[in-house]
Length: 408
Image (cartoon, rainbow, N blue to C red; front, side, top):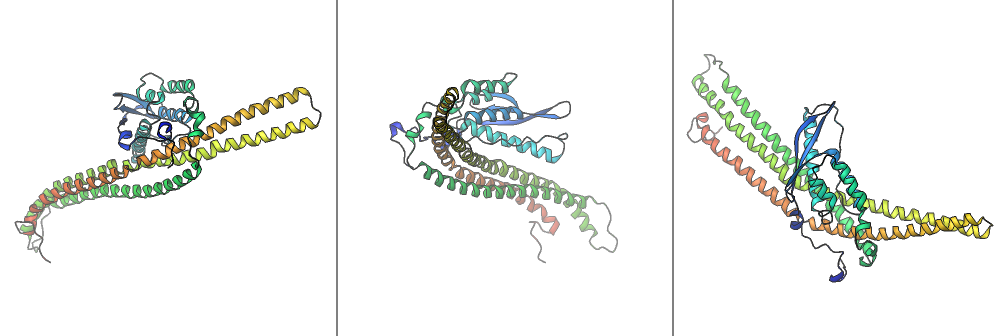
């Protein structure tokens, strides 16, 4: 992309992905719920590695934080919030537990993306959310935003953004947007496959456990074989072996469950993190087109109507007061249009930087692939060790000493 000379290159982001990831690491953990009058209220412990402090936050606190962050940084990628979904009963069903866990993970991704964003990381709103231990963090956040205003007001080059934009900014934006849309689609498919693999590992854990339990049930059956059975003594020996094998299958089940958690934590979560960022970029593009540009067009239309009214007033006799009022409104509208034009250029300026941010995060692909390969290597190694330990114990089942299968 064509940029300004280095001394004026405020448009280019110099960050690397590793630098962004090292900004902060935030843990969002579910703490024991507090019972309200009718519902149990979910609360989270938010721990910032950077600030070395833990604070307690409700979903509504995250929601207000997201609201003021979006108002302050309307021209930046602000990740979306997971849905609130009003709880209709106590948190005992599997579906409710899964929802609460999924929301906890999503809130963790949200706050980590925010805390690592090059233009959010040092902002007072972010610091307050991560460190404020007062009784009403929501009021505090709104108070801070009211004092500061949005980024267009506080950014030192906002009104000069047009001077830093390349001449073909619109063409660059359209090309990058299409590329990022395709990347988004591919990563969604990768995430869907990774989720299925993690789910299969969990299902494998359940099947192994049930398989072992059935062996134990079979081995615990004390019923004697009828006299016509020629293998009574062999069967008694087999039953003892079958019962003991359930322990090994329980270990295998535990290893498979660990594999599923690794795939979920190390692979699916990383994919979801990047997908959250990609989706927030798409949301930003829509805000730019439906917000700033649309408002600018509306203002221009209103201005043209006023100009026509003014021309009509000069042709037809009107009261001096009404003409002066119309002139005043036209001046106000001209000022509003000028401000909107400046905001439009600043929005494009920010879009250009946020597009770079997406590309800076692209090397996360190697992190995801590394996590995927490592999880498979570790999982197969651990499972293989248990299977190898199990094999010699099958000797008595097959009448041999090495656990080899008989030929049928």
